[in-house]
Image (cartoon, rainbow, N blue to C red; front, top):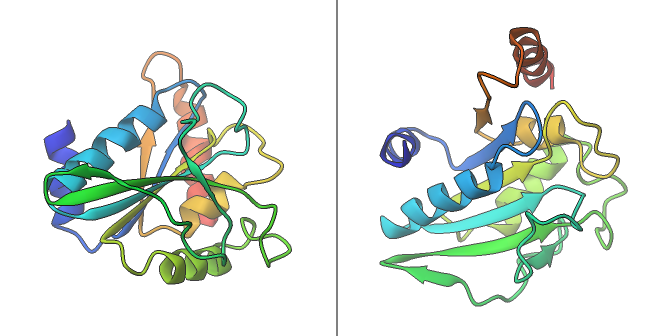
Length: 172
């Protein structure tokens, strides 16, 4: 799976990648971390931004630095992998110069492109797309990306739920 995702990303024009799930507790953070490591192993500098507002939960890495759109990339010591590296950050709306930096896909994309111009890839994890997130709209995050990896559980997610999320992504 890791090799397939790496090949798909490297052979496309995708630079900003959104990762989300239909339902919660699917391991999207682990999937993102593995793909970011694989990209770094191939020599690419990769930023991994956790764009889930529920930062008090266990999926948040205690070492993540905070990034607010438009504030530039904080000075961090990225984890080295072969020729590349991975910088882990946590997105926060507070402290941003924008009123709602995560509600407008065009504005968010412009901030990502400017703040992460020196990175080969930028990966953004979102809250599950079926859950309400009052601070960070996961559909806006996905719309700001070049491509989206959607994690679906064939047992826990209904076909109607997946269709609803896919339609939401198309209209975002």
